[in-house]
Image (cartoon, rainbow, N blue to C red; front, side):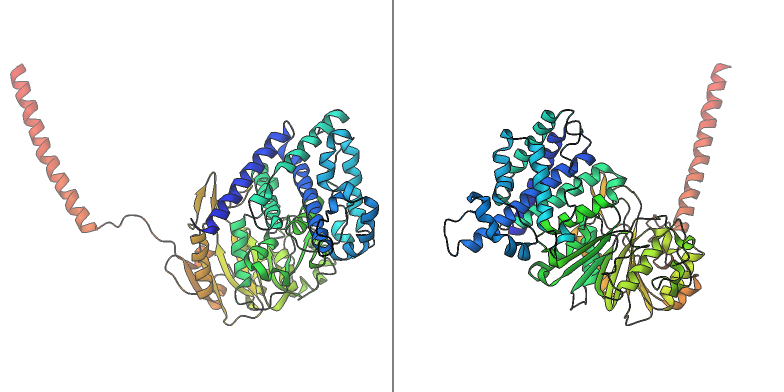
Amino acid sequence: MTIKSSREEEKQALGRMIWKMAEELRGSIDGWDFKQYVLGILFYRFLSENLSNYLNKEQRNFESEFDYAQISDLEAEEARKDTIKEKGFYILPSELFQNVVQNASNQSLNEVLARVFLNIENSARGQESESDFKGLFDDIDVNSKKLGNTVIARNKKLIQILKSIKSLNFGDYAECSTDTFGDAYEYLMSMYASQAGKSGGEYFTPQEVSHLLVEMVMHGNNKLNKVYDPACGSGSLLLKFIKILGENKNKIEFYGQEKNLTTYNLCRINMILHNINYDKFDIAHGDTLINPNENHQEGSFDAIVSNPPFSLKWEGKDNPILINDSRFSDAGVLAPKDKADLAFTMHILSRLHTTGTAAIIHHPGALYRVNAEQKIRKYLLDNNYVHSVIQLPKDLFFGTPMATCIVVLKKSKEDNKVHFIDAYSEFKKSGNKNKLSDNNRKKIMDAYIKRNDIPYFSSLVDKKIIEENNYSIKISTYVQEEDTSEVVDIKELNKEIATIVSRQRVLRKQIDAIVNDLEGIES
């Protein structure tokens, strides 16, 4: 067994163990509601250990036995200012996860945790990291009746959660605990998303699909500095850059915007859990289409990946300001009020650097619907921005069985053609969902890179042909579907039919003779 496969198996085993723990802990609480407690306290443990390890490493150059968790809060105050500049936050020794859980049974835990979470957020107040930590623990209501009808019952549940999360041995599963914390967090979010159905699928992109999109935007992009997702959800798409880049991840700055407050908090937590320092990410809260964050400037991103919500309702033409917005005005028309798919596409195009690449998950209808959407596609194609269109298999995403598509945009293309790939059949079954295997993904990427014609799989199409099809970029229009029905030789079939008919005649004569003999005997 290779080291890589062994590591993957260990990660999966850890994931199953964490999920089993989370399910046992929640009891009668709905899993989607309970996720905030498990994910939030896992994050609290990460912050505590991350800070302790950082300070221990710094101080042990001078004092070999130094242990930050064992010193007094008064002594710890001396390092607060410098540590916040570096890490973006601070936790006093008495409020570290390991010390709180050790004394959990001897205190009003709900009050302690509420104070600790507030102090962590307040440690960043007035600092450059304030926006990255503000409100991070808002969704962890330690006084919620969901945990129990009485304070005693709620504290009992909180003690169970803390002690269970303390028992997780991350050190046995990786050389770097931050990688494992991040992997555990991703695993839990994927499991909660699968259990929650549609509501979970709105904020989580399957890892293998994320991998494919990131590979596409990275191909041929040698100066990758800023990456962006305007509908970032929990950040799973952006974070895939880390897995692929490895040691080079520190060169990247991550930008995103998310409308849902809870999911926005999840994304920021996810960034920190993957050891992305506060000065390397800028995740904004708000409606990207109506109020795009001012820090996410036009033409500034080298790579954009996104899985926007399908057929989202938005203000559209009801808002007179939008038609004059530089993001949308060049197309001369706004996306329909009940289908914002191509509004996201136009926004993404506006934020893309001249040499950058964007890969967007699309509802298939956006590829061929008429009226306003047809006019937007005409603008995109006439200006030669559409690089590739890829058909994905059905049942890949949580919450929808739909066969989705990927549209790849580039502002600097070398030809005036669009490459179509039909990967509808490229999947393996995984439980009740489909999944892109490594081989499926590699086959798609190989065709994407070579930009070639492969019978029944891919086709490079001149823009004039797309014009003739009324600017429809529906994949099945350009990639012929293989006929898998059995080929029939008509001449041979006719011979067989003639033989059967002849045989029928002989059998009929034999039957008639038998019947006549029987009638003669009866008479």
